[in-house]
Image (cartoon, rainbow, N blue to C red; front, side):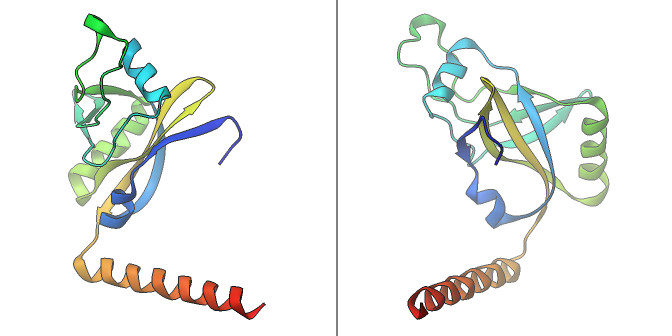
Amino acid sequence: MTSGRKVIAFNRKASHEYFLEDRFEAGLVLKGTEIKSIRKGHVQLKDAYISFTNGEAFIKEMHIPEYVFGNRFNHDETRIRKLLLHKLEIRKLQQKVKLKGYTVVPTSLYLEKGKAKLEIALARGKDLHDKRNAQKEKDAKREIEKAMKNHW
């Protein structure tokens, strides 16, 4: 993690459900009450996904609750938000999604220099046995670390 970056939300479900390959940083087109709510730490990426329309990338189902002091200017909590990426990045992601059966998922949302940034990853779905193997490896690593800690 670089300095000046404050992680607001992390999508644990993404690393459990998918093999994460290429990662990209995308800006977000937000309304005023949305960024205020994000700065308070109120955001959920669990069910969010990325879709492409007319050469543009959008994030759907990202939940940002209404800002408490937003009154009538508040936003819709799960509205579709545009992602800011370079055209070549969008084209590359679209081609992978169409041809090779990949999907694009958000992995984390963070603030960098006052701007909200979304880390997205090109992902390939895991099978059930892959999830089991990953859990076994994680448990074994934890046991080794625990044994090493107690050994010293």
